[in-house]
Amino acid sequence: MRFVIQRVSEASVSVEGHLIGKINNGFMVLIGIADTDNEEIADKLVKKMTALRIFEDENGKTNLSLADVKGGLLLISQFTLYANCKKGNRPSFIEAGAPDKANALYEHIIEKCRETIPIVETGEFGADMKVSLINDGPFTIILDSDKL
Image (cartoon, rainbow, N blue to C red):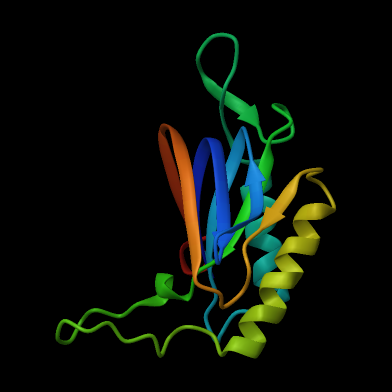
């Protein structure tokens, strides 16, 4: 499982010209799910992500968590995080999770996040989404379950 976490001052997602999710201060998270992933792995990444202290305190140090700043989450499923570009110029996505399993895990991640974070917005699984954000910093962190 891979989370690409961007600290944002604002982020939004639209499908077919309709705004479906929007946050101000918080994290915009791209979520990639592999066939080998499960709820235990998802729970571990959610716990790590929501506890990250990457917001600045009064001294300018990255010392505050999402909860400390009352930030929101915008969670976007993105199977292309499992693109394999080793051969040729056309990426292979065979490492990405099967849609049914990936969608179930994506929904699980959303529910786990809602247990501790009051503002959780989402994209639409499998849809052609237009994502807009202002990366604050810029500050981007990648959590990969294979490296935790």
